Image (tube, rainbow, N blue to C red; front, side):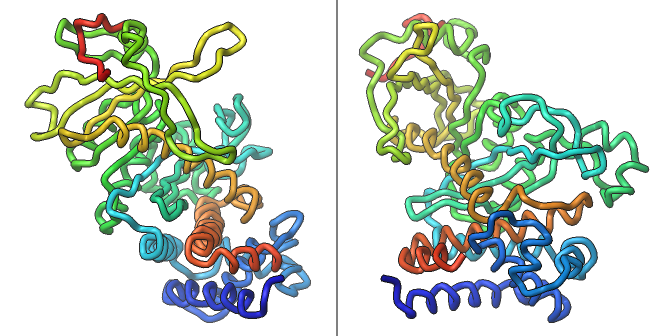
Length: 398
């Protein structure tokens, strides 16, 4: 049985968080409205749109909630920064991992900012959707989303009239997803977020400019790359899959890359050192190729293998590389919980600025749950009740 003290702790914690962001609202009315909006996102509502959030707040119509997202004067980027600082204050660790990835938001019509038919990993196919690129932060204490950018395709930036109809500012130009990811990582580093690692899937890891940027910022990385990725070796270059195909049996070690919903996530792993070049590799750093092999075979009778390029200070252990590779799962967990628990994808807005506002408030709610789970798990329960390399090419680690 939960006590009144548990519920009081939950309410008090949310009040404390809103005290940190209060200065981002220029008037009391939007500040109170934002707090009611977040309370609604945290509540166990069947759907979390303008109508249901308004009803939960005691409003007759959704006009106030729509005004909060579309017209009220408040600083969504400032709230983002405050929520990030709140997360770091409670979850931060020196060896934190920054994770970048995208998620899709299915939409009807053509009016929502950035919408078009495009591949959505969420749906696993091409759909009419918006894509948001996010940055998550993960440590042994917890994980949460700390930044966001809406991907605006060329079909939009080439049509300024269409952009203006959806309130996309004239200064917004086309940017690839890796570029958007770099912007968010730069904000995190410039704000002093304690992190020594970055991980991402092959959409980002396969971008050489993205990897070089990380090296320039002295951020270690373990990033997925496609099987066709060209890898430098002593005897020239080769594809990642060709090199791994020649890894000796003794190079493969069965290890967990972290706990999942069903316990340790076990795979077979192999690590090979790569040659370093003084003109591109940071001094005192090394490079590795990391391969992850599934324990079971797919319907074609083959083990599935994932490939990672790694760059980090010399002496970094295989265990650490595997840990960072496994941390990428954290952002998938964040997407799932943010959509399921706080309505990240349940907005009904078309404007560019309104998208950022809803997403920011949903991130605030999600971060509050993440912090509460880390420091006061009973209060979290109260919250829910309330609402081909040849062997000679590289040196495999055996």
